[in-house]
Image (tube, rainbow, N blue to C red; front, side):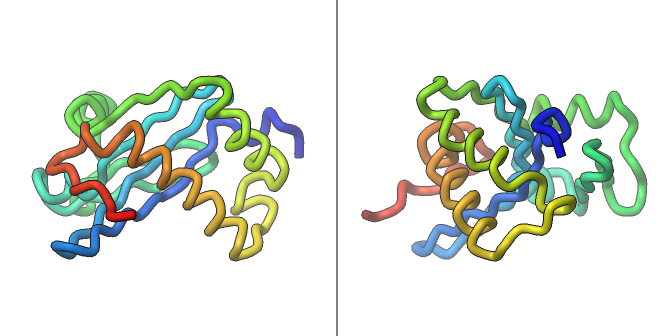
Amino acid sequence: MSAADIWPFQFEVNIVQRTPPRERTLFVTIKEDGWMGWLDHSGRVGHAGVGAVWFRNGREEHFRGDQKLTPKQVESEKQEFGIEVRLEPSEFQPLRDFIVSIGRPWLAGWEANDSSRLHGMLEAIYWKHVNQFVYRPFDEPET
């Protein structure tokens, strides 16, 4: 697999706030140049009703109930519940190197600790760049 086959890279991130107990699911699309699109799925579902996002062959498919959304509806939801982040090269390089070293999970077959490690890297980015922009932000975690 070449590095070009990896991008854009998609991953699901689940953030948990212990007190009060809350959970948030975000779908992250990472581009090779350091741009990241975070779709606040939990905010979308909590605000707009039951929905889903599927990643098939590197493409996103958005649903509300069992109805596939039109491109115009998808764009509207991305504007309302999406957060665009551009990482500095020094922030992005470790993430990029890690992703390139192991490929796409559904193509290369990751180890469980690979998913955990990537999730941890993305969770740190969430707290630094994304939380303040989501629907009903979480409290900062206690350290």
